[in-house]
Length: 149
Image 1: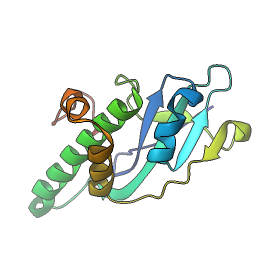
Image 2: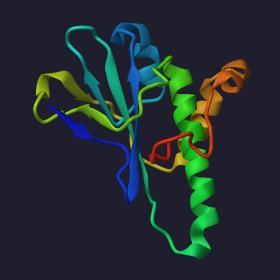
Image 3: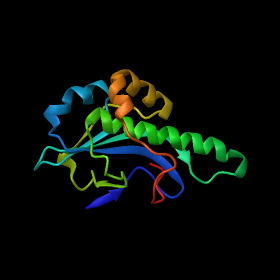
């Protein structure tokens, strides 16, 4: 059973990346930038890494539209950098993940704390090489769908 994660019609709460590598191959990266929650597929060792971010309300008054646009553009860049950091699946839309309450042996607290997208961006900038940062792909505005990232 899956649950909706990440973003909803009214708010973005977290970024989730789909890492198609077994846990041991990226364990060092997990320790360098701890996610809030990790859900491991016991069959493959692949996992979803959840990163909590400060809530970004998606329904704002007209005078706050530019602020919202900038926040979502930063979030899209952070998501692309997370994908580059983990070698994660860029095709994963971050909307659904396994339900940790139905699969308790498959998840673990990652130890990461939620926070501002800007802080996560700064940490990723420090962890990724310049070449990897340039290769990260993100688009704003998004190309299709209604999800901001």
